[in-house]
Length: 205
Image (cartoon, rainbow, N blue to C red):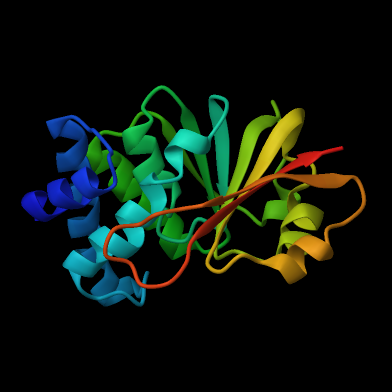
């Protein structure tokens, strides 16, 4: 699996250490193992997980600004775990409301030796933001409007919202709540992935 990951990273022009690659593969192996009992993802094939979960997450890393991030509705740790592995200088709070997912995340944290993640079981609107975050990240979590309404208290005044989307969500962008503006819409290239991917970066006005 490490060879497959290496070829995908090369195709995406992403350079990682051997240890980072081992951690990413270790995460896929844990996801595959726990998925049978916990139903963490609809993707069953580890090779497909490399494309649809790992690469789909790490291509976002160059566009993040800051050091403290929160991944809301992280599920089994996506994109937070892969991002924490490829961005060891930053810290990621992994927020999910389901206990079984948070138990899985704590196991991943323990087995991979990740010191820069904090799994938390909470509803996002009830989670205090002290100190506030540089970035709020979500992947397949909610519409942009819902994301901003539920997460508006989490970033610092200069902080950003990072929404990982499939096709460019023009309808959602048109419905942004007052006080927010789109900083950029970044098309993402994910090797071997069918369909479009976009990163929508939103700031406060």
